[in-house]
Amino acid sequence: MPLPPAPTQPATLLAKDAYDKPAARQASASKPVAAVKPAPAASSGRKPAASAKVAAILVAPPDAVASPAATAAVPDATPVAKPARRARTAAPTPSAPPAAATPASLDSSISVPAAAHHRHHHSPSTGKNSAKNNAKTAAKMFVLDTNVLLHDPTSLFRFEEHDVFLPMIVLEELDAHKRGMTEVARNGRQASRMLDALAESQSADIASGLRLDATGQRAATGKLYFQTAPLSYQLPASLPQGKADNQILGVVEALRKLHAPREVVLVSKDINMRVKARALGLPAEDYQNDKVLDDGDLLYSGALALPADFWNKAGKNVESWQNGAHTYYRIGGPLVATLMVNQFVYFEAPGEPSLYARVTEIQGKSAVLRTLKDYGHVKNAIWGVTTRNREQTFAMNLLMDPEVDFVTLTGTAGTGKTLLTLAAGLSQVLDERRYTEIIMTRATVSVGEDIGFLPGTEEEKMGPWMGALDDNLEFLAKGDGGNAGEWGRAATNDLIRSRIKIKSMNFMRGRTFLNKYVIIDEAQNLTPKQMKTLITRAGPGTKIICMGNLAQIDTPYLTEGSSGLTYAVDRFKGWTHSGHILLARGERSRLADFASEVL
Image (tube, rainbow, N blue to C red):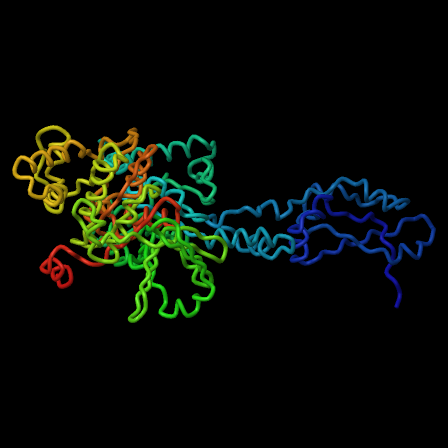
């Protein structure tokens, strides 16, 4: 087969930078190759070399060949003395590589021509960029309702790699709630400051989104978007357009169409808002980040029943020794992995000796148990109060232990939380003088409609909220006074009252309690932020007791999973100087016990 004649025109090379860009190679490969027509042979009279006969013909992309600049760079008659060198020194063809039109960091929210997107996605060396682009498409966009920011100002940074969108009406409502000294107003001001810090820390255009990690919140890798332009949406005529909730629903509807197929989700603490969103076919979720537990039954109880075969399996390997009035046991085995420091364990079986102990130490695969003091016996009564069940004995051991600085007590009505706490407090303040006084406070959330402002000083205003304190002090004064008569009881009441201070939670910020016995009643109505504010008031020698009934939460937007009491129990479990007990059995009266079960 005869070889084709050698070209007399120098080959036109691709631009040097085009060889370094895989997208350009892919673009040239995806288009038909146009061969350059060879020019007539030069009149040199010399036969072309054999190597010249088999030289490959290099071609430029079609758009580069068709351009006037490329035509000017390739003359019709060119000497063939040194074609390779002439080709190497020729002016590069001004080709526009496709990779410049489709950067790897292109946001999925921007529409891309089909051909360009196809080239970018299938480029052989852009696998990581394609993975990032796919991850961006998979990342959700959460539209926050105003009540989420008012409930938790840091909610902006709780969505990890997902983006956050704030409608303009949310900023308006946030501005309307920033005035006042309530918790909602403080949260509104804090949320506004965080938004301002994000905007000031970045010089980028707000319309392109603000990086949520710009202020040091490394867990948030998404972006914050504001509504910077009107959005077109269509809602049913039954929903008035002037209402803020309906405007937020309209924004969610518009964003779903604008960013399809990306998932856009509404996040709101308002149940009715979520119901309306689902009725319109819009995805809606509750704000879950503040919930410590999904189910209240999973809350740490503070006590564990040992298995029935505990002594048979661990009896031979148990070490025991005596130290004062307590007996210590060192146990091992798989049970140790489930134990926590200051957790109570008990063993009850017919025909075998019972064991009631507290875990005092865990080292590797072994744990040390210490027997308890029996406060159910009359000789160990505290201010005339004896414990009536197992859980009350556990609680009293925590309340009377000076090494335990923080105690949480939960339980239904009538389980003895307030009575045990006050009896232990009076014993350690008046008898042992371990603490100087008792400070008692509670969340002032009413069960029914508020009766208005109360007259008097701070303690007089708190008086109506402290009915539980008065009832229990009356019982304790009678038990301790015995037959002292009218004057004796009056003196005892005056002494008790002089050592108990009733304080309002509104004035706790900035205080420091030294050697105080602090009681926080109705702690289930506190938010995690309020709980943190109160616990951090503790100074040297102070003991704090939080008690409440998680079934009686009156604060709006608080549930068993997001209550400050649940938050404290979960965060402090296992700490050497804290303890928790769930009081399970009511001891108030048979009427109260029956009502708790059937009502």
